[in-house]
Image (cartoon, rainbow, N blue to C red; front, side, top):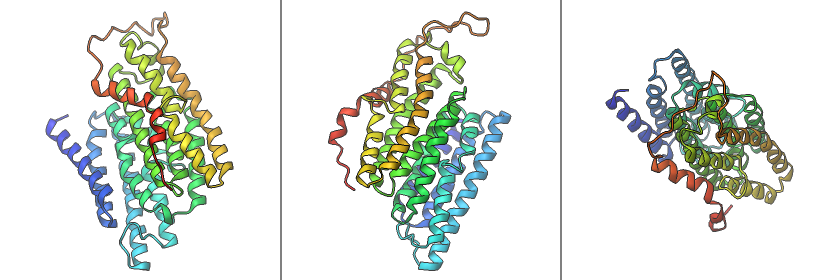
Length: 346
């Protein structure tokens, strides 16, 4: 890809994210979302493969429809209340329209169909951006308007997302699709608590970014696109694969790793809000995701590649692991002892 085009795309992503996250007017927030969408499209389609072009068109159509719904929601609210401030979303129809639009932007069930296909058709680094940074503007808007949204609707969408994210990830063999369903499942955890404690949602989101980013960079370093490749990638970089196993277990939410912190705090907060049935359901549904995370962790530590003609032994990589990847992997496994220092006020 042309370096100038890449610079323009990344500058657009930075600008769009900054505008949306720092604005309190609906038109400015919508503008930032549009800049983001237009900036990421060249990065998705840069390989010119038919699958990449298909992913680009799917992404553009879904995001354009979601942006139109956000504009329609804000205009309806302004028509009824005279307010263009994001935090002053009071009209019931506008609240439902906005929930639908943000669910489409994020990939929440039942508007999740585009996310696995788009991630599968994108390069690994672009898929990482789509699964992490591109979700920051919609999550910010959802946090700002959380006090106006329907709790029952959000809880249903959250439980459905956690269920489907775990269920659909079970039979996947492509690593990008597995991480897409992992993203849907984690979005369910973020959505279920957003009305009661928006700060906890943002903490969960930033920890999700912290843990998912090194997984994508490790897969990109070892060129792991499917599970059969992952089984023989141990010889490329044994240290990286051993660290990847711990990072995947952290993503699953196993103690004493970092990923256990948000799940622990969310279940605690739901119990405080007298929503123990919801906490029980979402905790049990996380076991579905635990299965495929354990499968990925197991494949990442297989030391003997299968002796078949289909899988040749990989060459050992002499290049050292990226310092950023090493730092993120360390943080994604060792941050749990800091959790008592995190003071989350309702």
